[in-house]
Figure (cartoon, one colour):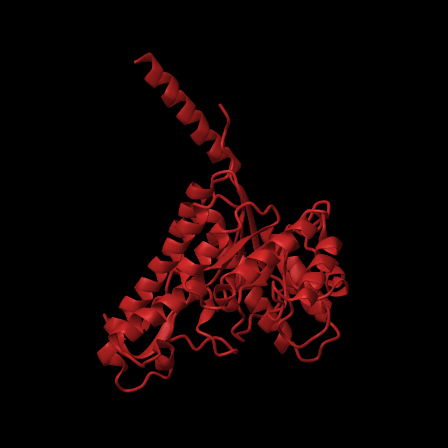
Length: 367
């Protein structure tokens, strides 16, 4: 009897995101080391990849490369760049994340052929990282699943599920069915009529969370290695400096200018409890197949003072604003990483569960 072991990797978004020098990356390295968290880094060239891997937080820290948004599976130049990055990252990074495109549906056969061609080239690279195609362009989830159902035989290409993107798309679709022509995300300005539609908003948000779980279950059924981008979302959120409604901490609360169910704040789409359930459900479905989770949470501009150890890289700085903003963001990532790890059984608990299962089976045979 084989003992099932989960093959799980946890990572966080690793980049500067604030104006400043390498001290910010040194601070990130320190915080990621403390959290024992792997890194997902943005790189467009082998040189950029080499530079960022220099800040790897610990020797065997897992790493995934997030490719530029304009890279397209069907584009020959993009294919060349992906192969160059794969060759440079071989043995150093476990995966690369490529955004999907809406044309994957209208030109489905072309994209499938491109996937086969690229996969053949990737498999020639020893220790090649897996290329994960991310749900990012707002496709119908069923179309996204069908695309991957068509390339199950490929060894080096799989998929990445961004739960926030899936959830927001579904929430928008649910709301517009009740309020034709209205975008739920336009309500983040909190117009006067928001209290009248808040129940529909929250019902749409709940629908979005369920849609994300449904897609996870369907993709897990394909029995492939998987990568996840984890972050929370809410259509009324104004936290992002980029104007988007997602990439939130799972501990975020969305302030509102009126009272709803006794509070002047709304819970995010998932929150801690739903995240724990989603991750646990994923692990139940994938079993021993590789799965990785990146916390793709964006900074919000808040500040956290530096402790003595963290202040060392910034002794030459006269204005510590960016450093304290970075420190706050890293603290948020670390707190969410602690939450994520709670959903993943420790090796000892996995062994105990397996032993109990074996004992139960032996007892059943004696009865």
